[in-house]
Length: 154
Image (cartoon, rainbow, N blue to C red):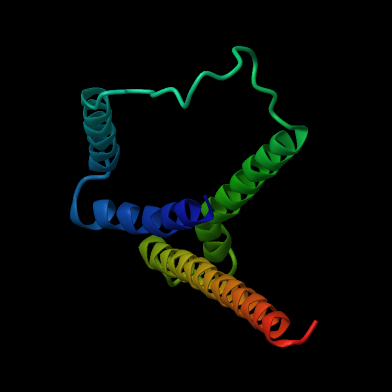
């Protein structure tokens, strides 16, 4: 979710700057609507097949309360990040830089969003590498302990 929010924060100022500089502003909602219709047409054309995993008990599935707490935290995070990202251009422009245009500020906000997105992806890669290394070390330690038990006299 963080990657998608960062991608939206980075791309929206670039798209707005592109459509205000090189085309008419109303092309942006037109292209967005056409893209949504294309995705909708593609999704309707796909078959929706749900295969049963086996004969399970029929009834309501209980969702743990921790899930709802996590979902609420994600929604709150998304609202906060979107609000602050959208206000960025206004805050920078009103902060004492009257010589810069809104498009130049949009490029700056887009660069910031792209940097934050790259940071999230790099941290995810680092955490994944550390997790793989930790699992590998645990497996190696298990093999060493087993080998020592087989070698040691009882």
